[in-house]
Amino acid sequence: MVDRYSVDSDKASPVMRPRDLESEPDGATTHLTVVDRGGNMVALTQTLGAGYGSKVIVGDTGLIFSNQMRHMHLDPQSPSQIRAGIWQRLAQVIVNVLDFDMSIQEATDAPRFVYGGPQETGDAIAPVWHVEQGIAAKAIDALTEMGHRIEVVPREGGAVNGITRDPETGVLVGGADPRRRSYAMGY
Image (cartoon, rainbow, N blue to C red; front, top):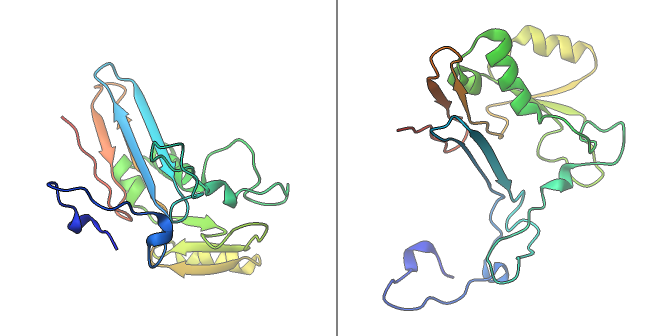
């Protein structure tokens, strides 16, 4: 098997195809948020969802199509119905910044919850809340009393990164999610 440590810059390496691997790697998400000197902001996220995504490569470019839409449903009763909106994690961070006056880093660090969890695939909708440790026991108890199934987890797995700009000073502040290998940098 070829790995990154067996690459020799003085000779050609063998081609590695997904079927050559002993096991399929986990999915991967790459996100970046950039602000240019003119103040223009862009957030870009590419998620493969599972090892090698859809396993469809665009010609000979090496770009792999995602399979993340496997979490979306046509059922109008599904919390993951295909429709316009903001993903749950991002909405929680935005609420923390706007409604609770947290910095982008505090909002990103704060405990979160997600409906369905990563096991939600195909037509199966798992009616369970994955709630991170640190969410108030009173809130968990109230949801349980309403009939929700709750699983308290060390971390729910998703990551959010962002940049805020102070409207008065123009100062930019980055927030990097501690749940993943995330970094906030500037110059």
